[in-house]
Image (cartoon, rainbow over all chains, first blue to last red):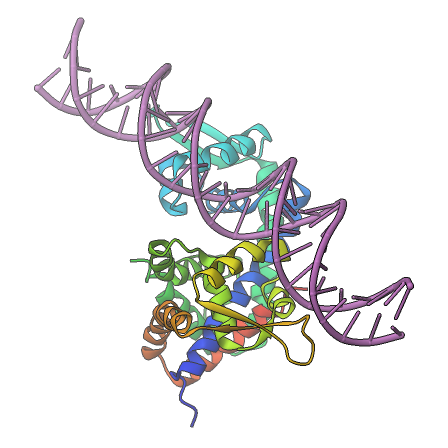
Length: 145
Length: 145
DNA sequence: AATAATAAGTCAATATGGTTGACCTATTAT
DNA sequence: ATAATAGGTCAACCATATTGACTTATTATT
C-alpha cells in the first residue's frame, strides 16, 4: 500500500495545485487579453454576477485587495457598460453593483470556459470522487489564517 | 440526487479552485516576505530541489516564463548562496542548477508549510478520496493547451 | 445644527512579476 | 570559418498590487 502522506506524494500534490491552477486560468486569460482585460476584471465580473447588488466594500472583502487596486478596473468595467453601479435606496452612500446584459454575456463566456474544464474533469470520475475533491478543496480554502 | 454538473455546482467548484489556491499560497508567502523573496524565488527553489542538476532552459520550460523574468531572481538566489550553478562536464554551455545546503533548508521550510496544509486536508478523508482528488487535479493540469 | 463616522473615489509613490526586442559572450557542432 | 545553442543582460513597457494622504457625499450621533 502506498503511503499517501509521504513527502514524495505530498510534493507531487503541491505540483498538482500549481499546474492545475495554471491550466484552469489559462483559457479565460486568452479571451480576456483580446478585450484588453485582466484576471481581476474577470474576478470582479464573476463575483458581481454571482451576487447581484453587492456593494463595493463587500466586493473588496471577497477579493481581499485594497480599494485602490479595485478602483481602476472597476471604473473601466463601468465605462465599458459591463457593470452598473446604482446607489442604494436606503443608504445612498452604498453602491450596489450589477452586471449589464452585455456584462452578463461576457461573464458567461469567461466562466463558461472554466465550467467546461471542470465539467470535463468531473465527467471522467464517479460522483463520490467529485464530492471528495470538493471536500479537500474546501479544506484548503479555509487555511487562509 | 444532486446534479453535480449543474451550473451552480460548477460555479461553486470554480470558487473552490480560487480560494483553495489562495489559501494554499498565503502561508509560504509570509515566510518569503520576511526574507525579501517572492513567489517566483520559491518556485525556482522548489523545482531545483525537486530536480537537482536541471539546466536553465529546462527550468524556463517548467516555469513557462521568459529568461529575462527568471534572470534577476535566479541571480539573487545564487548571490545569496541558496542556489549553485555548475557548468556541465560534457557541454560547458549548460549550467546545472542545484540547491546549497542553506537553500535546501529554506526550501524545506517553505514547501513544508504547503505539505502540512495538504497533509492536514488529506488526513480528514479516505485514501480513495485522495486518489480521486489527485485524478481530477491531474486532469485540470493537462488543459493548458 | 454641528460633528463624527462611513462608503466610496482618487492621486502619488513604490514594488513585484511579468513581457518583447535587441544584443552580448562562451561553447559546441557543422 | 561559420552557424547554432545556452545563457546573460540592458531597456522599455505593462499589469497588478501595495501604503499613505486626501476628497466628497451621505448618514448617524450628540
